[in-house]
Length: 230
Ligand SMILES: NC(=O)c1ccc[n+]([C@@H]2O[C@H](COP(=O)([O-])OP(=O)(O)OC[C@H]3O[C@@H](n4cnc5c(N)ncnc54)[C@H](OP(=O)(O)O)[C@@H]3O)[C@@H](O)[C@H]2O)c1
Image (tube, rainbow, N blue to C red; front, side, top):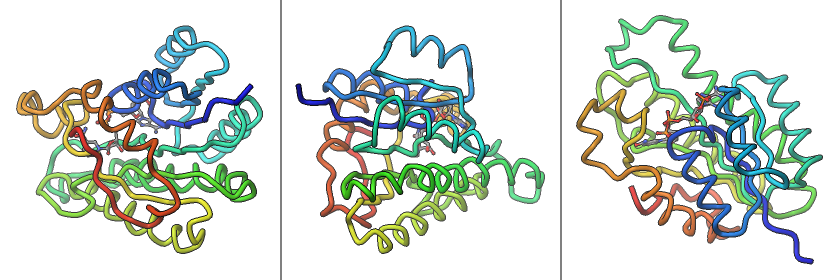
C-alpha cells in the first residue's frame, strides 16, 4: 500500500498551524506537529490518532527539538514537507520599550527555533534526496512597521536564512521563505486589535494555502513566495 505523505507542522495548536493540520489530513497526508501547550497537544492527538503524531515541544529549546525530531522520524518517517510555522510577536511597542528578555525570546523562537528544526530534520531529508522546507516569514519579513521591530528583524532573518540554506542544498531539498498573507489569528489580534476581523480566518486561508503548499517542489528552491488565501 502506498504510504501517505508526511508533513511536520510546528506551532500546530492555534492559528495557521491548527488549520493546516485539519486541511492536510483532509488531503490524505500524515501530520506530525508540535507546540508548547500540553493540553491542546493532547486534544489534537486524541482527535487525530496514529499515524498522526503530536508532541509538546518549545522550538526554542534545542534539546527538546532534537528529541521531537528523533521521535517524529522514528514514529512517522522522513518528512516530505517541513513547515516551520511556530513564532511569536513582541507586545506592540517602540524598540526602546521592549526589554532585552522579550527581544531575546522573539529571536529564540522565530530564528533559532526554525534553524533548530532544520538542523535536526534536514540530514534525513537530504539523505533521501527530496523534500521541501517552508519557513514562515511575513509581509514584515519584506517590509517594516513601527512597534514590531523585534518581529520584523526576525522575519527579515528568516528570508536570509532560508535563501542561504537553499544555496547550500542546491534544491536537493527545497528551502522556501513564505509570507502567508494576513489572517485573523491571535497573533494578528495582538498587532491589529479588532481590525484583525477584516481578514480571513485560518480555516478559510488553509483551504487555498494547503494545496499551494502541496504543489511546492525543487523548482521553488530559494524563491520567496506568498501564499494565496490571506
Ligand atoms: N496571522 C498572520 O496574519 C500572519 C502574517 C504573517 C506571518 N504570520 C506567520 O505565520 C505563522 C503562524 O502565525 P499565527 O498567526 O497562526 O500565530 P498564532 O495564532 O499566535 O499561533 C502560533 C502557534 O505557534 C505555537 N508556538 C508559539 N511559540 C512556540 C514555541 N516556542 N514552540 C512551539 N510552538 C510555539 C503556538 O502554540 P503554543 O502557544 O501552544 O506553543 C501556536 O500554535 C507565524 O510564523 C507568523 O509569524 C502570520
